[in-house]
Amino acid sequence: MTNLDPRSMIALAGFMSALMAIVLACMRRYYPPHIRGIGAWAAAPVFWLASTALFSSRGLVPDWMGLVGANTLLVLGTMTYYMGTRAFLGHRHTWRIWSGVLLLCLGVFTWLSYGWPNYEARLTFFTLVMSCIYGAQLRFLLRFGGSNFPVRLVEVVLVLHLATLLMRLGSIFAGHTGANLMEPSIYQNLYIGAYALTVLMLSIGALLMATDRLRTELEHLATHDSLTPALNRRALLQRCEEEIERARRYGGGPSLMMLDLDHFKAVNDSCGHQHGDAVLVHFVGRTLAVLRTPDRMGRYGGEEFMVLLPGTDATAALNVARRIHATLAVGHALDCKVSIGLTQWTGPEDTLDAMLARADAALYRAKAQGRNQTVVG
Ligand SMILES: Nc1nc2c(ncn2[C@@H]2O[C@H](COP(=O)(O)OP(=O)(O)OP(=O)(O)O)[C@@H](O)[C@H]2O)c(=O)[nH]1
Image (cartoon, rainbow, N blue to C red; front, side, top):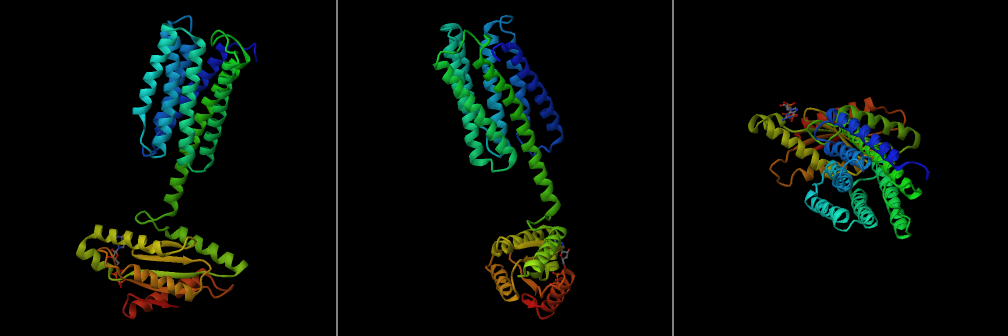
């Protein structure tokens, strides 16, 4: 490891950056623009690539490029990646603070290259700044990133890189800095190797985070109604089948409710279709608010909805129906009246089709008896 030429390791890091910049830039073109942050994630490896190109050209280019420029670009790339992560998770960028830090870096690197040329001090300062950016990003992800695999992967990469930076600080204080970046040493090579790996893993992490977001959004589109937060008919019927299957094995079957808004055509006709849409959204929001976590609500079609109440008999389900009627009678401008047909699972011989037919017949009776009421079938 000591015999490895740092220049070739820096070239390897540059190659990784170039590769990831291309992959992320291509990915940006094919992902919907509302998934934000991919542009910044794609720009970060470009800065890292420029930085490694300048580091490798030391001796061939002036120090303001090979030293000051290279260090500053490396810092800029790391900040840009962090801003991409913030944008991806829907947070405002904090460029105002970080551009101040970047200007400070530019000043300090210039001073430590020309005013008081000192490799050790430059390395210490650089390591501290990088630790701050990686640390800020790690803290941000731990607070707002959730717990899915891609985020956890990036967190692990950040922790490992922070450990490498700490080790590097330790090596500086122990006097193992060497004369410059190009002097082969185990510490130097360890750091540059870890850096190349970090570039690769951070870009892969970005790729996985964006793909995971896309998958979640597609899944939501495939299972939810396009107007209201209710499930769509297919997803709800599937949940019903699963629940009945579970009840056949373990008992404690579900109740089903069929809900139909009363005189909804008149709402549309008198106040317009948009107002009608708002009433539907309000109705679903209010109903979901009085349901328990395992309960599911879906749109059966038009102004007809269904509620699945797992492990609930008709008596308990009637209480839920009462709560729905009550929550829609508080005097809100979008409140509406609703008729409900309710049925409970009768045992292992019962099927979803039979339950739907009973709930539908009960709903029909609720309408026939004057609406705004619940009938058990
Ligand atoms: N605004 C809006 N209206 C819808 C939507 N889907 C269905 N509708 C309307 O819902 C109304 C349903 O009317 P009907 O089936 O006659 O029922 P109703 O007027 O509620 O009468 P009852 O059910 O007998 O109380 C129709 O006017 C549909 O156009 C939707 O997504 N948005």
